[in-house]
Amino acid sequence: MRQMGMTNDAKAYLIRALSSAQMNYPKDDPLVANALDGLAQLYGDMENVKMAEELFLEALFIDRGNAAQPRREYGIHLYHYALFLRSAGRLNEAKAQIELAIVTLSKSIGAEHPRTRMAKTSLVELVELLNKSTTRP
Image 1 (tube, rainbow, N blue to C red):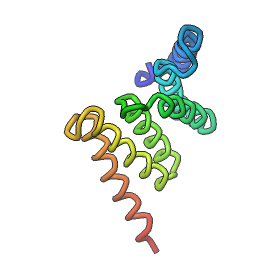
Image 2 (cartoon, helix red, strand yellow; image 1 turned 135 degrees about the vertical axis):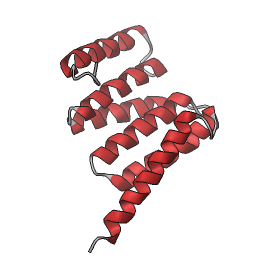
Image 3 (tube, rainbow, N blue to C red; image 1 turned 45 degrees about the vertical axis):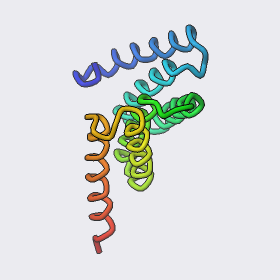
Image 4 (cartoon, one colour; image 1 turned 120 degrees about the horizontal axis):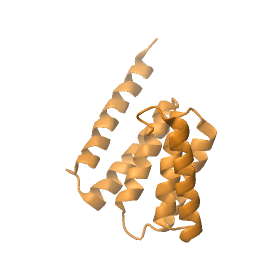
């Protein structure tokens, strides 16, 4: 729905999904973190930076509490948060989050998995962007 420009429909759907997850699962359940991450991405797309960041951080807090071993979802959520930070112009913070996402994804699904490789490509692009921003007069 987000990709088709149906932002209001997507927002209503994701809010219902989060509410359902929070009612049916413990507050620290990974499914709650997934719902928070999805809604955070939408708010980021809508340029509601404050709400997006709050939701991303809440999802990551849940993920860290469940991280007895590196989990695929935690790495994916870190990557989504990094993309959000990049779009907000917070490049150094984004770089740190992408690096952590790569480590987590490499341990949980492998260094050559397409998601891990996508994160590595994003890191290269981000480093290039950082280098350009520091070499300008």
